[in-house]
Length: 81
Image 1 (cartoon, helix red, strand yellow):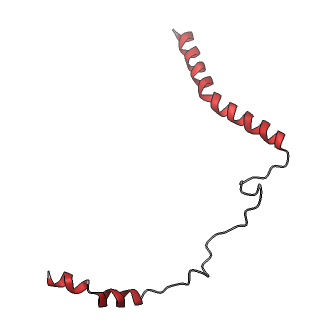
Image 2: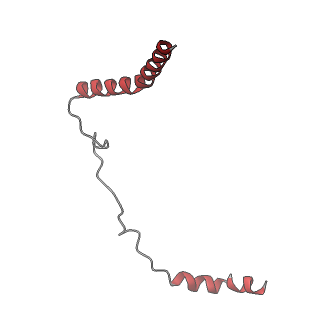
């Protein structure tokens, strides 16, 4: 028990923290980009109507694929029996 109290003394903690190299946080820049209006998306669109049409088409197609697959499998099952 004596070794646990000796290692947790404030002097040991301060000397061990003093050995850690520190970088100034004000100069550390990991990743940053200037976000302006309509520049936060990973793609660029100029025509809003064309974008809305393409987005709607994609969502409808992606949502309907599982239902089409189930219908196809049920139709195959009924035809085999």
